[in-house]
Amino acid sequence: MSDGEWRVQGVSASELAREFGTPLFVYDSEVLKASYAGLRERLHPAVDVLLSLKANPNVSVCSYLGSLGAGAEVSSLTELNTAQWAGIPPERTIFLGPGKTRRELEACVSGDLHATVCESLEELLVLERIAREAGVDDVPVLLRINPDFHTKGSGLAMGGKPRQFGTDVEVLRGASGMLAGLRRVRVLGFHVYMGTRFLKHEDLVHNTEQILRIVSELAVETGTSLETVDFGGGFGIAYFDNEKDLDIDLLVAGINDVVRSFLRDHPGCRLITELGRYLTALCGTYMVSALYVKQSMGEHFVVTDGGTNHHMAAVGVGSFVKRNFPMRSLSRGRDGGSREYTVTGPLCTPNDVLGRRVLLPAVEPGDLLGVERSGAYGPTASPGLFLSHGYPSEVLVHNGVPHLVRTRDRSTDLLVKQRLIDFTADPEQTYEYREQELRK
Image (cartoon, rainbow, N blue to C red; front, side, top):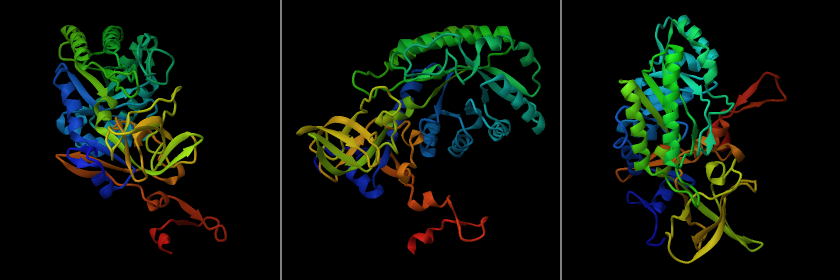
């Protein structure tokens, strides 16, 4: 390895690969802290910052951010259990999502959460019924609004047009009678999430201003209080060429101005911003090993041991135009002779491409390559069971010490949940997979 070998808090890429193997997600706690603290120090104290677990639900990542002061936004029973395991207080947790099951709503009723975000009036009535059956008198909720204005600058709009998320403003305006009839559920306020991957501060400031205007109007029109308003998040991270990261100073200055104005009319209101990608993306590097280096029709390829199955975002699935996440050689640094390589994974599909024509120092089998800015939507948004490779290990480096925070899936982990029917015996008989089968 060269002197330019990549390190995280003094721990080299080769050390990590020897101890934990590859593919591997590596998280840097110093970067996590900088992302959270840099925002928290600037943001108005009335605005609470919640980690959106969908971006990175690793319990140690969640716990560390919680120790710094972050709350939790969860969207499934397992995410709720993760937040609880991580030590996030229930009063700093909200539960949202358009398709909550009865079991999840029961957990919301019994969990003493700050709020359940109801995405339809029908869901509100189901929650009222569950609370009545459970004998619970006070279940706090936020009503998610699908606003009647269009967002600007989002990589993925989630409001302002027909959506499965939230309730249209006009529907809520006509629901004051129904809301007044609730006996077990208490409406604290409103939730609006306009979209994700905003990279211009002025778009986020504009959206925040419009959201707070709408909720102020709806509170009067529906006769509800404004104890809490969640104005969403969607703070973006630059991944691709010609993209720039948010100007956090201008962003926070603009949001703080809007918040101060809102609080003059609604003193004591708790405001929430829920962030996933912004808090976690920069801390993560997806590390893979080069298995083979080859040429095909004049193009140089590096075939690695990880790809789409672990990092769907990096391979551009769902994008109209394939663009590369930032990539680098972890073994040889950024300097030296360069060549364009198409970096692929091990899967049997031509779509399994981590980067096309990536400029790298000369790559040899055994070299370690890294996809940077990979702390968000890696394993959590990837088809880890494709070709039955399973999910990789995850490591959090804290105070210069690498900690294994998720073990790699073994073959036995994937097979143990399956059942084999004995087609020659009793038709109802099945056999569970047992680890000792591998030793036969």
